[in-house]
View 1 (cartoon, rainbow, N blue to C red):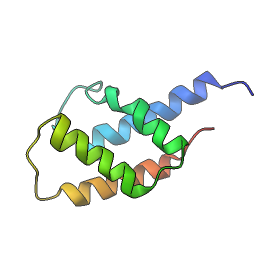
View 2: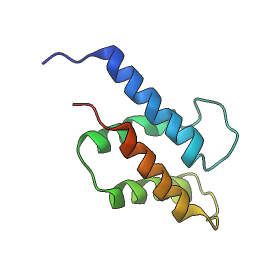
View 3: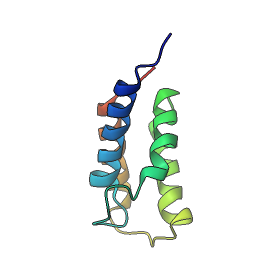
View 4: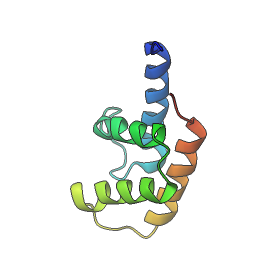
Length: 92
């Protein structure tokens, strides 16, 4: 089955938008700031990973990889991010 490259680009842009607007652990960054994570998140969505695993990954990126201090609203923001990522759906 052929991959629709344009559909894949649109899907990844939607994931990027969620990471830039809802997750956004740094705040006010350039559009490409979180592009490093789009591929991993896309793969996780495509593979049907659990919400818990998505939250664990994004929390790890933020707290361990980026070394950002834990903020009071972290869990709420991560849950909203996963809800919005689920709304984006997945591409086979």
